[in-house]
Length: 181
Ligand SMILES: [Zn+2]
Image (cartoon, rainbow, N blue to C red; front, side):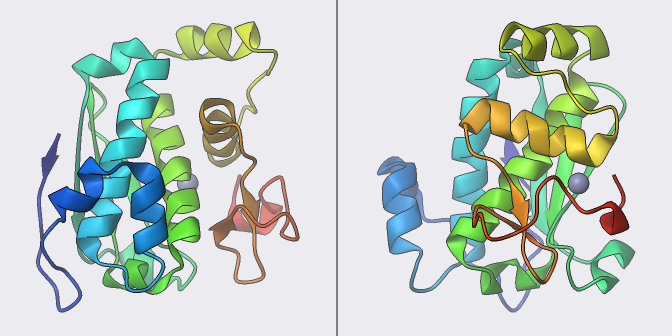
């Protein structure tokens, strides 16, 4: 995986040391000040887990950066994932991603990786994989991304008052219709 760093005022270098300590350390130490490097490290660690669950993804590539997108005009949007129709996807975060608590960044990342699985893994293969674990996937892409994330990491994704992904169960699940399903 290659990180295409679009340096912004918020961006900083990835911190390989924290990454080498693993997800728990990353989540713990990032509670004080979050950098783009922390976001990218967390993404890479979550991506490795997704690949281990769906080994077809070892042949896939994801790239990521921090940058602008018309989608980010909506204040609730903290990431966007685009597929190339083949084996690669690009995930972009707005600079304000570092303003979210790390646990919510994690929820956003898991949702986006749900999209990655949906973009790259053939439809029937993904359906059969989910059914083997007792879940039938929603037919719409946004709820499907949340369902895939729940299957892979074992935690349900909710939406808080600001309509951003969270693990806080006082939020709403499944994803509210007004956000697009
Ligand atoms: Zn989405």
